[in-house]
Image (cartoon, one colour):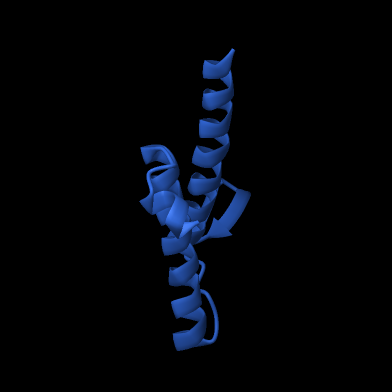
Length: 80
């Protein structure tokens, strides 16, 4: 993957997404190694409804996935 990225086969969006995914993964790994757990510190919800508890690293990984999927469909639309 790194080779394809460095050779310019990936778009800027794909490179950013991969960087975000790696950063999120490394951040979770560092938390796990330093604290024996990954700290989830964002509790999202409205009133009594709670939709999720997660951390910034998880957000980066999910956003990276959404960017990669979006880029895939964008490329497919350009081919038509």
